[in-house]
Length: 293
Image (cartoon, rainbow, N blue to C red; front, side, top):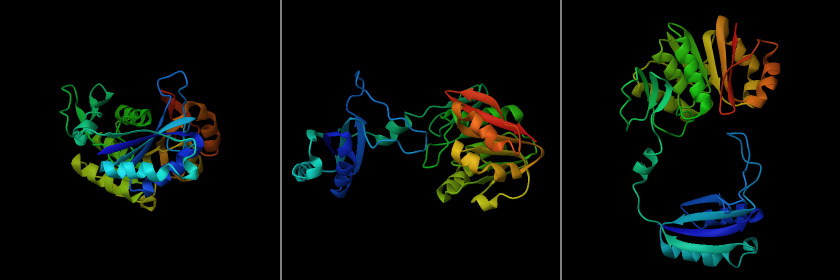
């Protein structure tokens, strides 16, 4: 493998990246060329949403090619192009072979939800103190237990222990919340998502954890539930207010996550016609909001 490393101003990043992909680069990544210096820049954006800019003021664009000749040819073809103005070729260099699977796995350790409840990748042994364990490997669908929103939802489930309840996980991603509810005694669990890949991921993860649930597209959610969980983002949660609250049974609970602390008031206003949301947990700038019916 060989890397072609380019230094590009912000306004050239998108065109250069598109050209590299057209030249059969195996991958193209963009980094802040001034990272770890006083000139370092943050690109702010709500998680799950595109950043407000395509690149940093000075971006390091890194393209990976299978052969050195491909990298050198790409460099030669880029230099005379108008869109390459003000860009610089930094280096063409060999990338040492690595065990990428092992390297990726090393980045994911067991995650503690409570002292006795853990999320454990399949290549790790559960900690000795773990009484409840969800086995979950990072995949395409959101939800590995590493994000504060997921941890807060799982803590709520562990503390409430929905024994015998009917539970809905709306926007299930990997199915981690649905699996957690099943582990803590839910009588029946529906997990739904607009992404068919997430539905397949949830089914596979449920089977790996030896729990029973029903996964499907959103129209698979029907009737009333004792607990409705939705770990999405603030904007879709506001749009879904009538739908989600309409699924909560009398005496049931609504649990919402994917919300930044500064968004609490706008969520409360969106749900005011249906219920009274309150902040039940907070971690790293994210909040968990719940309502009792």
